[in-house]
Image 1 (cartoon, rainbow, N blue to C red):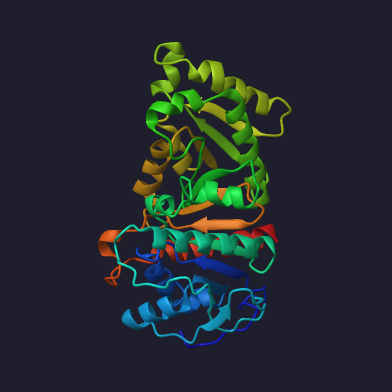
Image 2: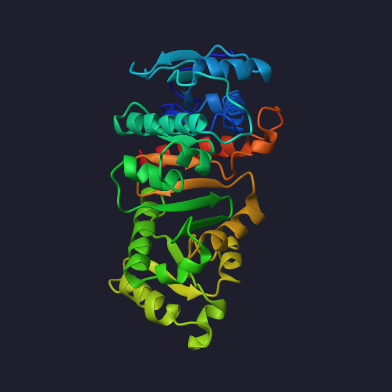
Length: 343
């Protein structure tokens, strides 16, 4: 990782500055972040800036055999636009020994501060996008941050009320109507206004990312899309009216609600560009079955680009040097691609 690179890539395009938050320091986030920025092919296409604690990261880099010549940027200093090596934007916020694989208020606080910093730098234009390593929701809570995950936390930081969690895999895209809520609460959250708002958000965001007329499919919540009311009424009362309202002026290409047991296969085969899922596991199971390690989490609606890995903190293997960085590499590459598409 000692090789230096120009501020433009091989294709002559500007190498965007991608802020990479290292996630919960007690998990595999530091490892997969360090491994990812060691890929020379990736370095040719972006200027990676790790958001973390430099001393902590350098210690793990030596442990993993990834000693680097990373440039250290002290928190508060400007990030240059001509980085020729990876950089670490250091918060110097780990004061005690972190117990690997253990949830704690200290690690939760540090991971939250990395996210807050990256969001601020994106909003200020010092970073062109951010990619996040996994955080622990419990550690975040122990530190006093009452957010169910990155998506809601980032929306709060960006003062954004219209947002959604989405996942992008090579042959399937999925946006979620509800995220981290108990399954028993989902039916009460499937309402016409929320469905219509998400369809319009997905259409707008997909256009921003290069799809001129995205083909959107809405997945039903009940088996067989309710079977004419026999298995549930949400499709007829809440979902179909939302689809009809979005289709009324002919500008949005959305269909459904489609039976959840076939709509993802149809999208995987190319019939749709993105599927709107009613709940977390309905959308995540097909994504992870098709492309675990390749899928990327994207937050729709933010004023900046945010991508993330499709896995958790993996506390059971934290610090062992065996974590797979493929999802982190995929997330950074997608951030680069989305930057050029939006530019």
